[in-house]
Length: 486
Image (cartoon, rainbow, N blue to C red; front, side):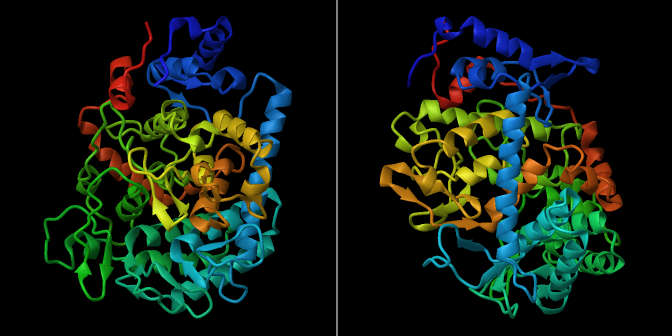
């Protein structure tokens, strides 16, 4: 590990750090995303990590108008390529979205006819949002949402309202003995609810709420009544083995699922379910620091947690710091050629051996660069400055294709993914959309009454003592090794 000395803290870096943290009313702070060049130094990163807790501002805010324009252009370019994925890979008749697709050619060995209910949920949200930008017409978006939700309602297998995870995109027939998945159904519901809120179409709204009302959250909480006092949701149900032993009992991507359950229009979950999942912290005081990035991203693509308080940590700020930590690993894992090349993003993505979930402490040197872009809502300038470097670097032709950035890379093995995953490009698009307050997903999704109710019931946990997200020099060093900051 390369030590960091105070001599590295140049006047430029110190000035940049001082301008990045601005006091606001109420004793909080707001990050102003300026000074891209100094942000590449470990010095400024540590200064930011050691700062007092902040609430991040996500709209791009650069001191240089030229730089701001460049980053916005980059964001739009990524979004338009991501949108193309859903236009190309949603079935013309059913609207169901392929799980993955080739990024550099019309065919590749990894391609198949398999759709996923989560991919389709992301597609609903992306196309609805694109209609607010004028990238597709409102008529197109309405027709797409109508046929997609109608097909899911009529043809995709459900049990107690929960959809199967994987199925044929044309017929809807189950594939791979797929499970009935709670989180994947929740992502579909989130996309459908967002589309309903944006498009104001009575047919879309009626079908969406028919699906929402049918989702039996109490069944998944009590395992069909076998455990009436259980207050965590089972992750899934299999026809042969029943409810999974695996529970949503830890900090992960299930917050969107729980909010939907708490705000359910007919049978809401009890507030205790929000307090039932563990909020374990790593040695640096952060929740989920050792987990894949998607754990921090999926729920927050839809729910704006920036000002949410439930007596625990600020979830947005926690995820911002975890994203900073993952980006910082480029400087800490010197043995990795992939990280040394500037790529980062340990998450769920494609790998030389197929689909793989990676984390900072369990990976094969493959990083999901598309997944790092989904942290743009947490780190807009840093992520987009990295993107600009990648776009003009030595590997551009291997990483940029029809749908934008390829899913993953592994420089050690000279391997570049041929495919992109819908669960990568969808979050890329939606995270970038949240940088524009006038077109953000948050703006519409947070206005949905059931979401408001769900969050209000989650706040009932605020009687518990709040734990602020702080990162001390001692804690940060304990997680990734000692840093010489003498």
